[in-house]
Length: 75
Image 1 (tube, rainbow, N blue to C red):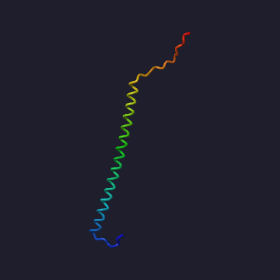
Image 2 (image 1 turned 135 degrees about the horizontal axis):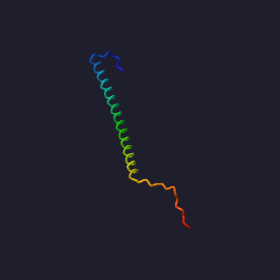
Image 3 (image 1 turned 90 degrees about the vertical axis):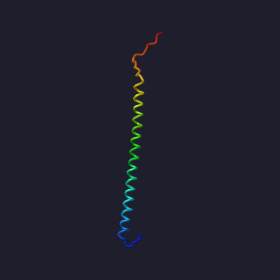
Image 4 (image 1 turned 90 degrees about the horizontal axis):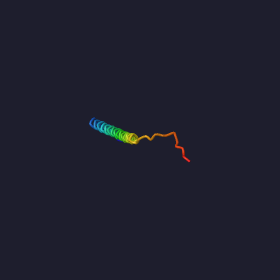
């Protein structure tokens, strides 16, 4: 590490570079959060579509009445 005193211009450049690095890290973190959010929304939409398709299929099938009376065999 350089222990020599820095000039005002060098200190300004160091601060600017540090700020740029922090901004880049912040932007990357925000992009990661946005990507995770998109993945969650896509998964939710897929699950909703599956559920709606199943419900539609269930409605399309007529319900067969369950008869409690059994036919007697004629002998």
